[in-house]
Every structure is written in structure tokens, then in C-alpha cells.
Length: 345
Image (cartoon, rainbow, N blue to C red; front, side):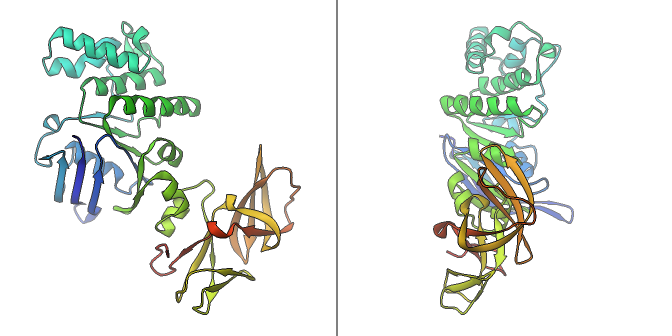
């Protein structure tokens, strides 16, 4: 059982607070992604779980053991770093076997585990080669195989694909997801890349300023952001936001149109760019830039003086300077509190 429980974990570096009393539970065999921009605290949290940083307060549990006082080697974890950290003077076999030899496992067990994990990562044909002779993608596979060979309770990954080109990242994402599901290992994966997060995660924890803003399934994080920050961070292009005026009866005036919404004193209107379509009774959008993207066209416009984007079918002729009415899909509209920036349910 490798459930991870993070209880009230905070971290200060001098006067700077990197983490603010974080609470998070990661289920056994779950693939959890910590997502956020640089400096949001995601790597600090990962390093605290790994034992490479000491929390200023709080507890870390793995299974039924409290581990925040234990050294990394006693936590039952393995870690894969951004820079691969493979040894160029060793063969692929010896790189994967490194931790097993340090643990003084018998040679037969070392060979069994190395062979199994090499097959999982599709590098069994490379075992006799030196890692210095490998491509970036092959070295990354070696690093993952070395971690899996330890048969850890938990595997921690810190932006492991960021040094690969786009095509290799796509290939490795699919491979990682399959391999880690097969190994039944609890995984925590740090990234700033929302595509990686959406495609890999069972759940995503979106972090900002040392807080976890939302932890949920990828579809929920995308469709029902818990805060304005999540809507503006997740999505490419991100959510559109417009000011709204209402009388408290649930009818809201937004850029000359009226929409049904929450019965509250103040609200902000939000809609994703792909949830808009041209309509006679829509928000008047003055087109600034048109970007053809194959099957779709990304339109950057202004609505009531605010920046506004729409993803439209590419068969529609649109030019800069056009004014096109864009209507939102009603059940895709979201509302946020303009003061707290939290979603209004």
C-alpha cells in the first residue's frame, strides 16, 4: 500500500514562504501530476516527499509510515530527474543495475530486474551499449528503467521529458503512462507543461504561489476550474473573461448580451475559446488577428475592449477588422467571484 498523505506541509526559505500548509492525499497506484509555473512550489513539494528538503512544518506519510524524519534511502521511493543523471562511463545494464548493486542484491536478482525493466522500456537491445552513445530519448528510458528496477513504492519524476523534442515527448508520454500503470507504482510527476499533465494524470494538482488551488481529474480541472487562475492557466488558448453586471436576480449583462447566471451580488463571466460559435445574437467581437491551424482557426479579437479569443471552424472566411457575433454554449459558461476569484457554483 503506497498511499501518500501530505498533512499541513509548509516550507520557508528565510523570509520567503515556498509552501503554505499544503494538504494532499495521493491514492495507492495513482498517477498524480503537480502542475504550475516556475516558482509555484511544485518541485519544493516533490523534494520534501523525496527527503531532499525538510519541511518547516507538517507531516509526510507513505502508507502507514510517517517518513518526513527519514533519509531518502529509507522511504521506499525512486526519483527520475530532468537531466537523466545516467553515468556515461557505464553500460546501460550497469546504469539500470546501479541502485540494485548498492542495495547488495544477488546477481541473479539484479539480472532479473534489469532485464524486466529494460523490456518494459523497450531498451533490451541496448543493454551492452554505453549510455554516452545513446540519444536523449534512449537515456531517458534508461533513467526510468533504473528507477523502476528498484521496485519502489513511489516513483517521483521532476520534469523528466522537458529536454526532449516535441515528437519524442509525445512518444515517451504514451510509453510512461502504460509502463507505470503496468508496474502499479504510485507516481508523482512535476511539470509546467499542461499538455503533459492533461494526458498523463489520473488527477492534477494545480499549484500557484505555494498553494494547491485545485486537485481533481483532468476533465474537471479543464471544464470546471475552481478558481480564475486555473481557467487562465489551463488551456491553450486560455479561458476568456468579461465583466458582468446584474441586479441579483440571476440575469447578467455581458458586453450588450444577457445571460442567465448565479443569483449573487457580483460575478465575472468566463468561457473557453472552443465553446463559442458565430451566431446572430452573440458577443460582438472585433477581429485583430487570424491564425489558421489546419482544421480550426484561432481568432484573437476584442469584446467590449477586452481581449477575447475563439477557436472556430476553418471553413469560415474571417479577416482582421471584421466584427463577428460569437455566442457561447450556454452550459459551458462559468462564473467567478470578482473579489475572491473563486468559482461560483
